[in-house]
Image (cartoon, rainbow, N blue to C red; front, side, top):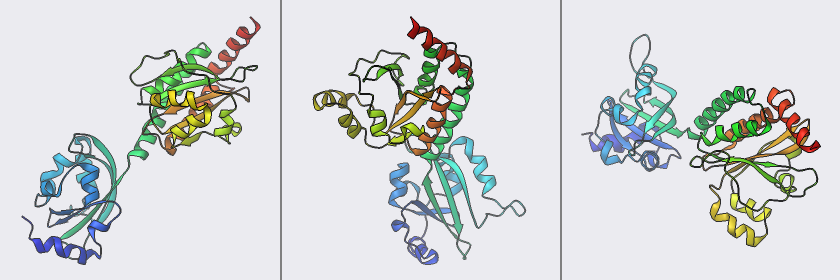
Length: 307
């Protein structure tokens, strides 16, 4: 076990109180864990009693995702001497006690006494999710070019997002109707293209809730309840609120031929501004004038309106 004085004097050597840090942190002494703070416990589920006194190499299999263990070992060593680097930072996935892999930005610093190390961990899940969704949407962009109709383009869009764990719905404008109509919708647990049996929102909410709508900029909302209450009369809003899948929401404008066409509305607790940026670009691809699928979609709408 680590001597109690090692944990007590750690803060003196680093001029920091581990438990006052605003991020998750742990401390090591001679290669063994000597302290963790409350934020580390809440973020990972690991308790100090499970970790203090355990060697760092011995805990890697329990704390680090398998794919990152070798990378972690290599990056924390000096390439020439194979000695531990005095400081550094890296991105890796930490295993929680429930088996979840949480992406973290990890930074460490060795004290001047060469015995103590301070390790801080910042939750990088929003950043990792943004990168993951951006990659998925980039792959989906290629599939859009193979869609033959407007319906297929929109279904491909919502299916891509539901596969990432979000609920996605397309709201479409009709030229002479003050109400929006529902296009394809999909959730992680419901079939693609399910019929949306909900009251139709007024067209003007697209610009009222998102002042940048006409500039083709997506909006990220953290309070979905407020949006529902602003979009619908109170009796209708009360009916809809229990159906709201998440508080976080992104509204990405859809434009075709430089004219507003509708919006891609995405909800999910994991949504963040980084994902909103990715959805902004994706929505532009869905309705892009130069996109082959959009050309075919416009032809489909023109035929429908002529009929």
